[in-house]
Length: 356
Image 1: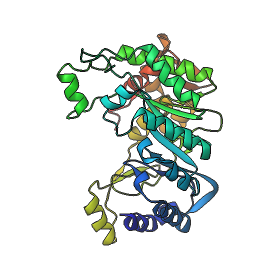
Image 2: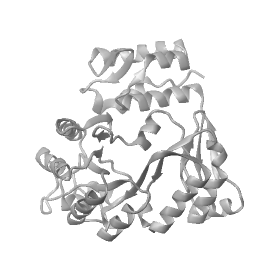
Image 3: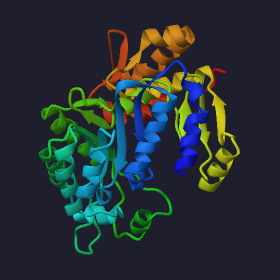
Image 4: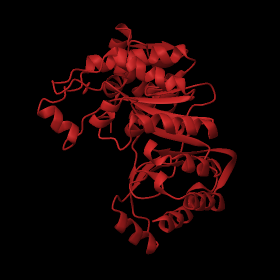
């Protein structure tokens, strides 16, 4: 697999001839199962085939159970300069309910060690979680107090970036079965909204900037990798299931590992390509722009997509402006604090679906 990844990196270098690579991101699955030598080998392949900026952000996703003291020390000696750690919760019952492989002690120990060697660390936290600590009785929703304790624990480690998401229940999972059998309460949107507002208030009070709907960073610690997605920059995804974007088209690799390797061995890129229509690009800009502090530029809508799109956007946005869920300042459309939790639903109502 690693050799196939390196070969794909080489095969696709022509796609980035005039670009500077600013971020390299080892994303999940669980890339932390790679050895340090394999990580170095892959990073070297990028440097050999692409122009890389002087100080790129190089992130590795990892789970606490993968990050022993020895492993963290190894990684600190590599070119990896940012860790994204899937903590999810500091409470044992939450982790069991979410079927996580790590426990609360491992979560805290890995952060204690990681902060010794890495300055740039992000963690994930999940809110809107049913409380499964009630001794066999049907669980209720996580209390606001318990959620505050989770946030306070995260803040105690001094990390500069937090990503936080509402719990979603996927079909055919253990969590879905527990909900269906009444052992755990179904996630509640009103509770999730309360948790979201608590999160925003507590993190902003501690110097975090809410720069994207689910992401909070201290000054100079925004994720450069994810910010590139939201700002519509080009990116190349390497490996099975990886997605790429060049400004006008989107492509994605086959998900099957053996078929991916077989295709790469045969010098064939195992991907499908979709050319994005004007409406697709408009909708994507609306979706990503509304989620960020940079908002949606009305001037860009008119210059890039035309007056028809601008008129449509203003017509669709009016009810949200009237309800104080959206605001316009300096020709930038953004959600208000009241509207932030509803951003994705609002964005879908601003999509232009039938223009072409």
